[in-house]
Image 1: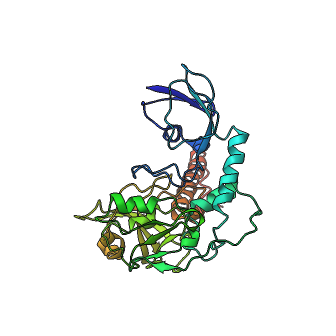
Image 2 (image 1 turned 60 degrees about the vertical axis):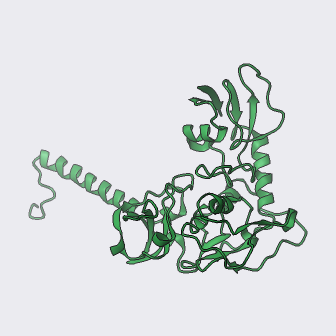
Image 3 (image 1 turned 135 degrees about the vertical axis):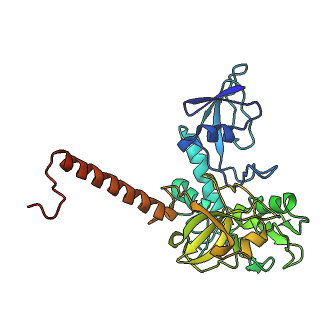
Amino acid sequence: MARVTIDGKTIDVPEGTTILNAARMIGGEIVPPAMCYYSKLKTSGGYCRTCMVKVSKGSEKDPRPMPKLVASCRTTVMDGMVVQNITSPEVLEARAGVVEFLLINHPLDCPICDQAGECHLQDLGYENGKMNTRYEFKRREFEKIDIGDKIKLHVTRCILCYRCVQVAEQLCDGRVHGVLNRGDHAEISTYIQNAIDNEMSGNMIDVCPVGALTDRTFRFKSRVWFTKPVEAHRNCDKCSGKVRLWYKGEEVLRVTARKDKYGEVEDWICNSCRYDHKKTSDWVIDGASHVDKHSVISANHYENLLKLTQDTKNKLKQFEGKYVSRGEGALNPNNK
């Protein structure tokens, strides 16, 4: 085991644990943001640099600080290591710079983007971004293309996190898309347009942290905060069958994989569950999805309304008990 201290909080973790995962074990505000790292995808991380932290003490054996900020998703902890994240002004300034770079070519599509409300770049821009841009040159522009009959690709929104490429490599039978060109001309693209047709390809949509890959069957149907997420499952011979249904009224607008608090899927799902089963009768409902109170999806969420209703009932019972114990019967309308 290795003992590491992150922003003043100490934890013992197994050897080989990264700083990012050690911070996630502690939880709370000290967890660095991550746009490219995905725990369920091998070799992910090290691309976006948003998870940079400062190592002010290398280890007990070598207490010297590391000379530069390091990517917490790729740097493993050492016994006695001391790390600074939100307590370091240097880290916060560098992270704001990284966010500014990510937003250089990213268009202001939030008013029309289906990812709005669950976009990690929106969160980063709000928490670490600048109000104005210093970029004066022409931005990258690409045409929207369909990669398969269910996925729309907006390359202008892409931040080149490589998650979708790793999904294709690790989940699909054959990879037919990747990163073409170099530098500011680099883009996610298919070798043959409309070529992506694989039973697990829909997971590319779930792992995309921005609105670059969107579900064509859900596009422009509703804002995510107007929908109600529900956990459900079915017996499926291709995947786990554990999904999240997004309702608007009685209609299921889309089906996605369930995600944890870090936005990572809990289990991969197949295209059959995602696209072919959009009726309530196809599923066994497990209950309301838990939505973080800081998420815009929590606005008017029935989980909150149920809690409010229960709290009201509990207070009413306390109120009744108070007067009944005093023998006043104040709640009886016949008593004057």
